[in-house]
Length: 143
Image (cartoon, rainbow, N blue to C red; front, side):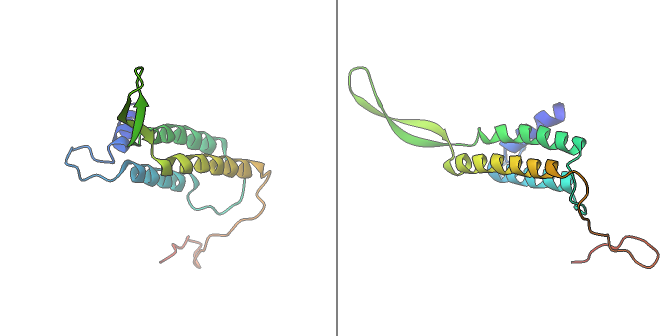
């Protein structure tokens, strides 16, 4: 639990814990974390098959930790407020960044579609063989 709290704080601070101001934006930190999470859970996929219960649990748990951080990425926007005496005052209100507001809903829908698709497979329908050399050792792809 402590590591999760530390990770959460690091995301909110844009991976900058020294207060030096050289961190990245919180949105980019979250994006990088989700990318790394998907790579660690899905890895190299050689089979199209159902999502294992362990992977499903890890994915949902970690996504449920990451998405609330996005609610804290806000912007200050000018607004007007009418007082009881009828006078109008200009105030600044906090609202979630509009790009995140739209993207988060799309991300949640895509996430649900991905999990449903993976859960709909009943057996391994096809797979890719790993490249091996003459001795049967797995070859690494060079890029």
